[in-house]
Length: 78
Length: 158
Image (cartoon, rainbow over all chains, first blue to last red; front, top):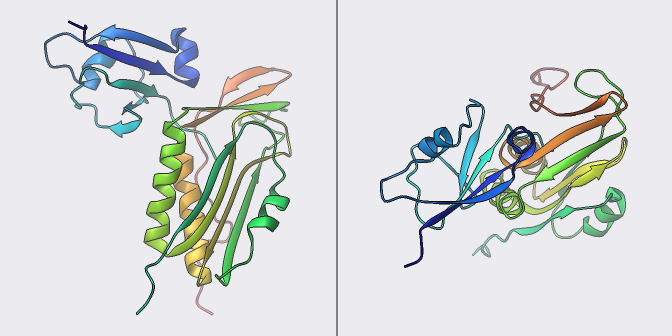
């Protein structure tokens, strides 16, 4: 059986602070929210937004196998 | 009967400097009488007042394009725009170079100007781009976008 996985991505200042940009982690059998994942990763910044599969989600979004989860610092484009 | 309203979108990211006026000249004209144009260029001074040599613009490939299209469709539908041209730089930008070009065509000026203004504000907050300032004194990520500051306050009635 293929192990259920999540792809994680960090950007900009968060990527530099953490020293990684992308990694794959196993998704366990217990329900996991985006906020709980953020806590597990030790991402303590309060100003992050979360995107799952390239769409903004609420912190209590439940993650599913194969999801791409991105943690985004405040946007500064335009 | 009115034909169904169509929306023409021409949205793209540019990974090298672009000249906004030739793009505008090619795009401008056509069926709609009102056009609003905005060009945003890189400032030579950073958010801490320091001199800058360059900006590095990072984005989230895939999500950025998706958000630009979603925001453009939403604001065009809200305000009544018919055509939108958008270019946004990614990668390295030098002072004075264009970072963003936004042009909106509509039947009436209010529709064109409102779409332009609202879409610009939306993309500054919801399209995943991040700017890093690079200068002789070092580099740092821009912390937050400035708010929209009309210089003259609300319009008085004529």
